[in-house]
Image 1: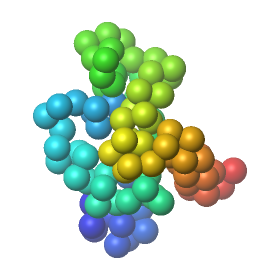
Image 2: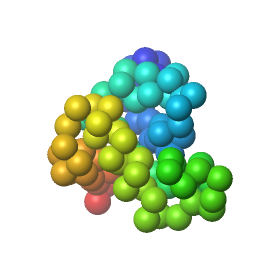
Image 3: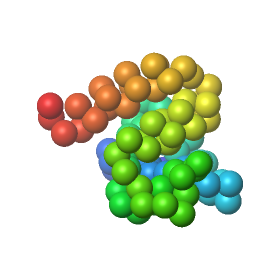
Image 4: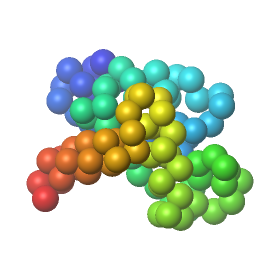
Length: 93
């Protein structure tokens, strides 16, 4: 992640962030920082908890976002505003 950030890249995180055995993924998200964070569904795969094992769908991205908000110690609304602004910047919207 340090090399990705050094080169100006952005990491986007899926439901894997919510898995109990994904400490390395959470560490990568924290290393990147909230200001560069993006989240995604990767539907129909990588379904977040509590729906793991079922086909993923875009509505489940909220679970990943809620988990990420707790991980970063911010409110869901702050995380949503920050990740939306980051995605808009990244995609030139």
